[in-house]
Image (cartoon, rainbow, N blue to C red; front, top):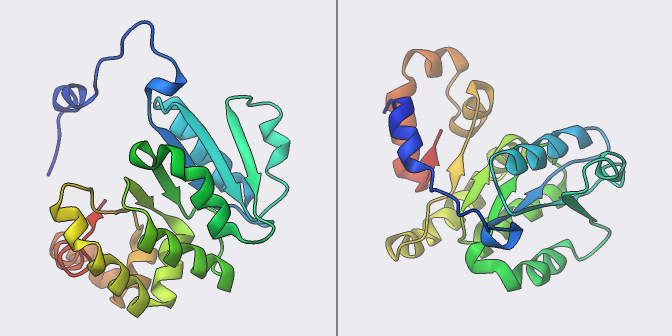
Length: 202
């Protein structure tokens, strides 16, 4: 489906003049590793630029704090242990209003796979699954399929499907089609995967 600029403008809600950061959804940006800390920084910056109330970075890397000194609008938390309970505890107050961006720079280690599984199974707020989170799902497809299918009832009750944003290489790993096959039948393969996994595919 193609949208015009005018249609897109109508989807963006008007903001009142006396609004503040608490007036808009917070974003949790989950990702980053010692090799790819910049990816999650870009994610948080993008969230701020499109108007989120507050962008909080959760990262495996303790290097993310360097740019945070320059960008005071972001907060950073670093995973040392018990990452699932830390995220869940901090999210509890804003669970109904939270947006999660999962994956940029995350890596595909065992702990990254556990985090991806935990988020898919426990958070039914708006969720964007990108980059290495998609690669984690391609490593454990049975777990990801079960987690997403278990959310079907939640979606029918009004919650959003997770949003997947694969490029052709990531989509190839998820579906086991070659990139060449994907490029010549993007629409049909996307619809097939969307129905199977109960997601929005971008």
